[in-house]
Image 1 (cartoon, helix red, strand yellow):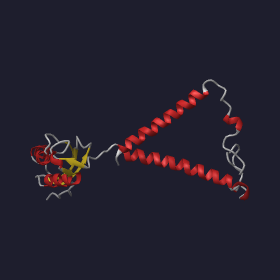
Image 2: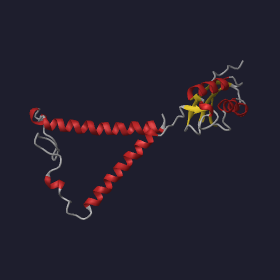
Image 3: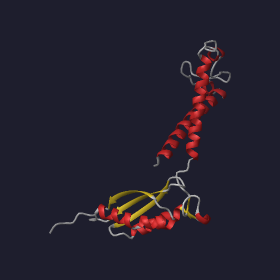
Image 4: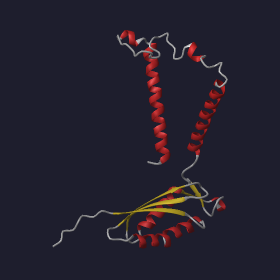
Length: 201
């Protein structure tokens, strides 16, 4: 799972739990469920009756006469707004190039290459290398500086060194040539296929 997706899911889960619990609390008090179902809420439990409020007048005005109260409230609100803006901008930032301009940015003659097409072509080229059993390619990064993340599954007995050298000498230069770019960043992860142990005779 990507880091951004994990953070988003955690934030959404926490927000959902808080909102769900608050909604149940308000509904239980608003419909007077404690009295109808003969339930006794804990001491000091908020919103236990239809006329109850979450914060009474005394609680709301307890510190309003203090000199530090309003600066603290304003600072807390500013922090909340800045965190919300930071989260929003993080969602809007692209993590995939989408369409890759051919020949650089902007695209030469308006020609663009779909990210998935380049990924599929590069993966097929890598799979034709000796010692490679499976290859997956995913393009990441902004449009101006795309990066290929390559996952390689090596055949049993193959050595990583020659496979990586062949990758740098063949598929990657061909991908750069096809996109008209002087450089295309790449990150490769290798793993070896497990094979069944052979019985010694």
